[in-house]
Amino acid sequence: LTVQNHPRRTAGDIVLDNLHYIEQIRDFHPDIFVEFTGRRRYALIGYFVPCRSIYPSAEDSHPMVRGLGVERLNPLTSNHRVDRYLQLLERLGLPCREIRFDLQIPDSEIEQADKLITEKGLEGKKVIGLVPVSGMKIKDLPDSSLRKTIDVLVDDFDYNVAVLGNDKRHDLSDKPIIDLRKTTSLPVAAHLLRYSGLFDLIVGVDTGLMHIAGSVNQNGGQNNPNGNFTV
Image (cartoon, rainbow, N blue to C red):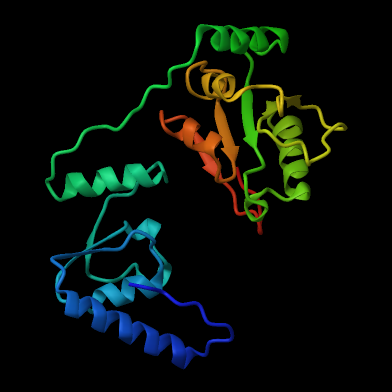
């Protein structure tokens, strides 16, 4: 299906679009309709497709579609997309295995990471990692949200906050942080995130470092760059 975005669309336009999508899906004659987003629009489209439908759990769905009598997946503690795909394969009875990749990190980079932990005095400390910047500005964490988050974590929860990434566009010189931005290579950062066990939690925007952290069940969360930042 190709979704076209039109400016200033009326409610009537949206209804016609939905009817068009339902018609296309019916013509395709799918065996299964899977809806991952939990949004009401796609949930209602799938509801009118005559085939087996699988939806997210009620907790992960829009309030308006929680009452639909459809087959639902169990709630997930992780919001990583791969976890959802694996859950679906298990529900369908298809053979699958846990997906895990190993990073080949040179010994010299591991030594640098361990040295950094020692130099910063982080061994045995409560540490949260923040990844506020991605390769796309629209995804980046607003400065005000980042500063507020650091204040809450440091002052209210007594955490050490380490900021990672390859961009120092946020001026945090007045904040009590461990500034690791532009000081670590990718292998060093990957070791810190994945193998060191340093962080209790990683919070950040949609970027490569977050995917590395999330690939080994590291606690993590993402933010809405245009709204409130929640840990």
